[in-house]
Image 1 (tube, rainbow, N blue to C red):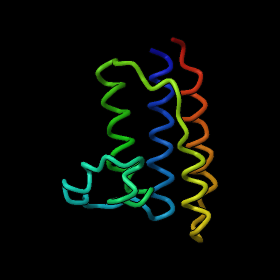
Image 2 (cartoon, helix red, strand yellow):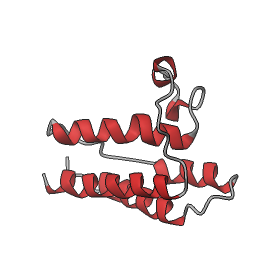
Image 3 (tube, rainbow, N blue to C red):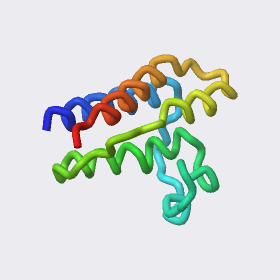
Length: 109
């Protein structure tokens, strides 16, 4: 379960970085926006919202329930594309997202 603990620590870092750059929302989007079936919910949420309202809660649920974590992750490239179009200082967030990609990619079968 050490992988879960490591991922949980990085989730805390992701939340902290989102807060620091002003991308953490006090209110959730409407429930319909959270039911998107598109990758990263691109049709209903921006990337920061997807991290806050879908990715982080889902990963915390898996960890809390001691369920298997995904064995692959490609969040950092999507984040790079999204944040490159902004003036936000997202270097810390990008480092945390690369860390979660690396941790999930190193999961043992």
